[in-house]
Length: 227
Image 1 (tube, helix red, strand yellow):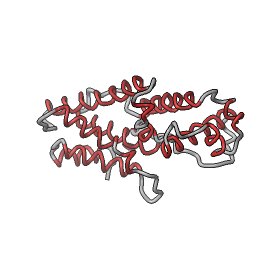
Image 2 (cartoon, helix red, strand yellow):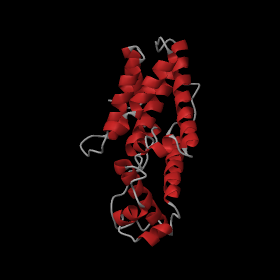
Image 3 (cartoon, one colour):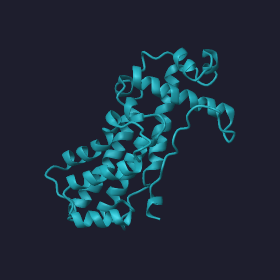
């Protein structure tokens, strides 16, 4: 099935009991990460204490330190795991047998879906001052740059193939990439709205922004199971 080509991140489990399929230690560590991510996003990294993180998941502060010695270690692991999961979720490489338009459409759908379903809300965390200017800034910037470069390569190839039109490649790249990156500022989980459908809608808008022929876009959407 075409939809199976999209790699989906498992949605976060909420509350307890913990799954018997996961070791207790691993489960507790994941609980810490998710609670910390929520608090960091809501009130900022500096304003969040390890005590607050521990209280959010119903453990005592010393128990938290058995998983993470310092608060900065929690932020480091959030970035590391999110980056790892992101590259797992995106198509592994650009398929040269596909048109650039096909490849970009699939890339965008995977990218946007990941941002809506990964458990830490990394889109919001990336705007923390500690990630923009702190010791993790270079790693975050490098990962982001790799994805932007991939968007740019596909858009440039699509222009050469006659599928896309743009006056400025850099502007087009950052605009299309930014459509997904802006999700952190407005998207919140709503059981009545499908993240898959939202990802399709944004990818559709982005393709129209690149002035693809409507019939070509309809054919691409049909190939990959979009409505």
